[in-house]
Amino acid sequence: MKIYIEDSYDKISEKAALIVAGRITVNPRSVLGLATGSTPIGMYKKLIDMYKRSIIDFSQITTFNLDEYYKLSRENRGSYYYYMMETFFNHINIPKENIHIPNGMADDIEKECREYEEKIDKAGGIDIQILGIGTNGHIGFNEPAENLNIRTGLIDLTENTIRDNSRFFEKKEEMPTKALSMGIVSIMKAKKIILLASGENKAEAIKNMTNGYINTNHPASILQAHRDCILIIDRDAAKLII
Ligand code: PGA
Image 1 (spheres, protein in one colour):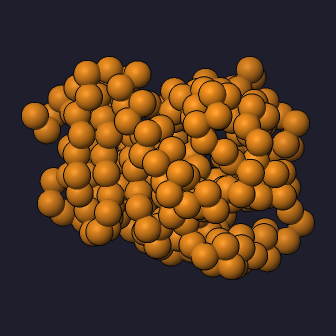
Image 2 (cartoon, helix red, strand yellow; image 1 turned 45 degrees about the horizontal axis):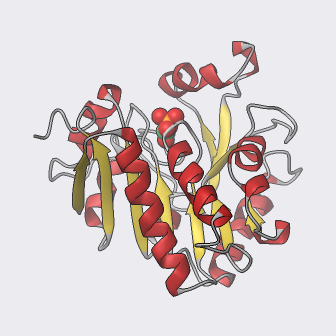
Image 3 (tube, helix red, strand yellow; image 1 turned 30 degrees about the horizontal axis):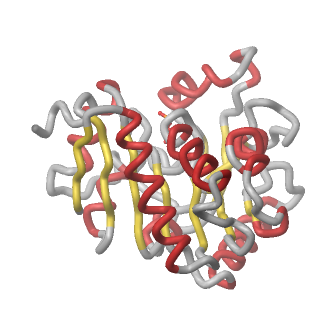
């Protein structure tokens, strides 16, 4: 695992955006795995800027998002569908049919999860997977637990995640307690993984994912077994490893 420690959030965002842009330039038909949350917002802004300056083109790109809340409508401002449209997709030229986000409103959730995996495989797998990390070490919504989902599935969110993420909801009680998430193997199958982290509140999680052990209570620690995983973090997030 390569670790880049940068001076600022802006530098993290820039480095990640440059790697993604490089990949898109080499292969305009790349498949991107995308994440939500506060951390990748700067990277999305830089990619939008590069698109507007005609440096990159998204017309043949396919995307798969990591996760979505269960039984939260797309129109809800807290949904990841809403986030992705507002933060990224509405500002670039990606065809709507190339965008994939798990549908938490599906009647048959098992079928939705199975088909999501099939769509990733059919697209040829994910070339670059962007990840954030939860303060509890989750990736996607794979929460610390004895057993982790291999494939996309329905997950019970932990108290920690409900507390961390309720900031995205106007009314805290709207925050769902379950979500659909790509599984650990769905993530590990990506050809390249970039994990971004910023801020002191991520320092413990970063320490626990780089300590040389794989522990399902720190789901991100599995990334140590990936061939091409890059951590791009700021000094605050790196505080306990430098
Ligand atoms: P954040 O979330 O970027 O909002 O900190 C990261 C995550 O929970 O994976």
